[in-house]
Image (tube, helix red, strand yellow):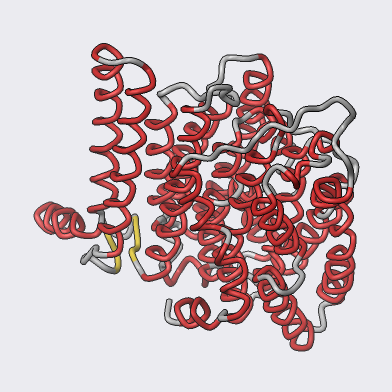
Length: 491
């Protein structure tokens, strides 16, 4: 390709990255706007302006993403824009807008809960930009750079609050992230050596990997390290409890879904591009280990946010159940799972934050809080049933589709690891009942501690909007799953 043709390809590709260009401008605008507002107004007014600008800017980014015209290969196949990328961009955008709306309550409360500095708006937009790029990445170089952009913003958001816990959590996140990044980069170098290309959509990429044998399998597993890190999958899960506990609730809520959604798409693309038959057993072991470790560890937790952190490790295992099937129905089930998990997990973090007495997230302190806000208490029961995977919530539908695809794959391949994952995975749904329903049990059936004065739950308009966006779909998508399934089938 001549230089003129390369320049023309770059110009033609700009129509496919309008949302990314907008987010880059929004990032710079928020950076400058924060400095100007802090000099001209008080901190409360500054936060109000930054919240409005961020929510509006993210909404515009979502609209631009859905209207991008340059579909297909972009920038000489460094990126690839298709309906799948657009779908996952919408998931990321919705999660970001919801957590910004929820943070408005903490920033305006008379007793703020670990108030985030104003820099968090800029870092969140930078993180969303990285996730947008990650959803389109089809080149090993762009995959690596996108994951690093997401990781750096995540490290900063984790340690942004000026206390010892945040610094410790951010440092652990950074150290484990650096190790997984190094492993991933080494795996990518092996893949490049085997195939002679960084483009995972190239015909030679899959063909040469199929002939690579054990070396190709090892290289693929090493490359998946960075993706599994973002999924909080075993054995790259160790950072999760400390980082979630260190980060304020809106940040932890965003970590629980947005990076996982983008990482899931990258994982499915890597498996589709390469020779994935040899990856089925290792992925089944990873999924099974995540389900077991996440559930058994969550049983022992006394802090609600750490419990949800271990829950995300288990949910990552359940998310991989559909991927392990390595068939079209499995990939569709995994996509449905992550799309519905968006509503369930965000609602869980928001409701626990709202019902927590005086900012305490100890489970014992939730006793008797149902009388303070029966509506929020009922919502929490519904959401916890959704995380467990019981009807009448969409969590049941998501697990049903995933395990059905897994059993179909077992009947086709006869791989014994798949039936082990099927049986133990379903048994762990029962195990998860014991910790998911602990907080609702304390909330409803246990009296408040003697002498404790129940604090009234006061939510802002933005927080009510965030709950209105996240809680109703947990029931509605159980009653009408075809609304989402038809959309996913057309991707």
